[in-house]
Length: 243
Figure 1 (cartoon, helix red, strand yellow):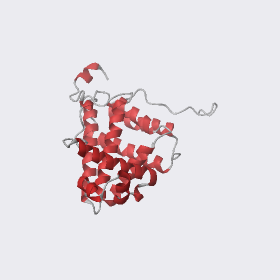
Figure 2 (cartoon, rainbow, N blue to C red):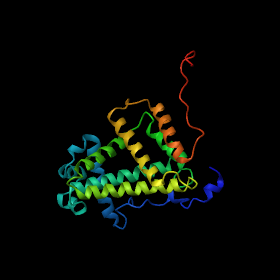
Figure 3 (cartoon, rainbow, N blue to C red):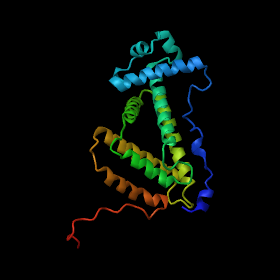
Figure 4 (cartoon, one colour):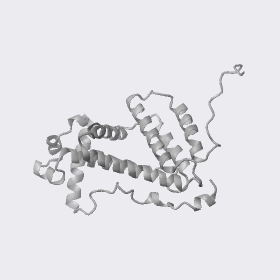
C-alpha cells in the first residue's frame, strides 16, 4: 500500500489506546481492593491451570487465596463472576502481550500484514499455548451455558462485537475505497477463521499441515484486502508429471 493510502487512515495510532469493553474493571478501586481482587483471580487461574475448570470452586479459591467466604464474596458474589473476570484478565493480558511483541501493529494502515503475522503465530507448532488453551476452555464453558446464563451471552456478545469493530476499523483504514466486501464482514470472517483453526488445533495439534493451511488462508483472504502479489504458490509436484 502506498504512503498516500496510509496517510488517510483515520484510526492511526488507535492500537495504543484502550480497547472499549476490555478496560480493567479494577480501575478506580483502592489499592487494597485491587490487590484482593488480583489475589482471588490468581488463585482461580492457578486452579484452572493445574486441575482444570471443572475443579474450580469457591472453597478451593478461599483456601488458596487465604480468605474467608465473606471476603471472597465481597469482591465476587459468585463463582461465575470470578470466571468472567478471569477470562477478561486473560484476554487483556494476551492483547497486551501481542501489542508489545515484534511485528506489524494494528491501526497503522497495515491490516493485511497484521493479519498474516497473527495467522502465522496461530499456526506455529507451539500454538495453542497453555494460556491459550485455558482461555479457550473458559470460552467453551461460557458457550455451553449461554442458553440459561444471559450474563454470559451478553458478555461474550460485547467482547466479540468490540473485537469485530476493532478489526473492521483497521481494515477500513488500510484498504482504499470502494470496498468490494464490507470491513465488518471481513472482520467476522477473520474471527471465524482464527477461532475455527484454534479449536481444531486444541483438539488435535496434527489436524492439518500448518504451512499448507497458512498458504490456503492467505490465498482466500488476499483478494478481500486488494492483494494479488505475495500469495504463496503451491509446492511444485515431482519432476516429469507436468501435463
